Amino acid sequence: MDIRVVFCTIDKLEGAKEIARKVVDKKLAACVNIVPRICSVYQWQGEIVEDDEYLLIIKTRESLMDSLKDCITKIHTYDVPEIISLEVKEGADSYIKWVYDSTGN
Image (cartoon, rainbow, N blue to C red; front, side):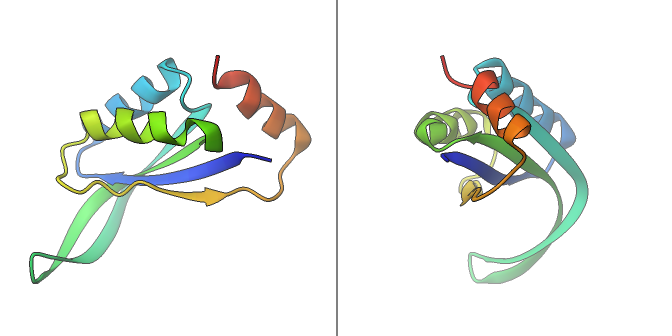
């Protein structure tokens, strides 16, 4: 199974929606969930930073990861956008089929 769940954070809802629409339109993702108002605490340029962000949960295929990362990076406003993927080991057969049918060529 080459299904991936990708996490990406961004500071504004408009940016989150733009990324979501673009990657779904280009068939780089089957679905993107936008989770509002998460609090991220991280180190940036020697400082501890705490920001409210939006979390994008993106469902895609491993074979589309390079194109997905390129697409997100072109749109994203951060210097270092979070784009990380987790391998899906198991899932409902009908959902996995839908992800395949909704992505790629």
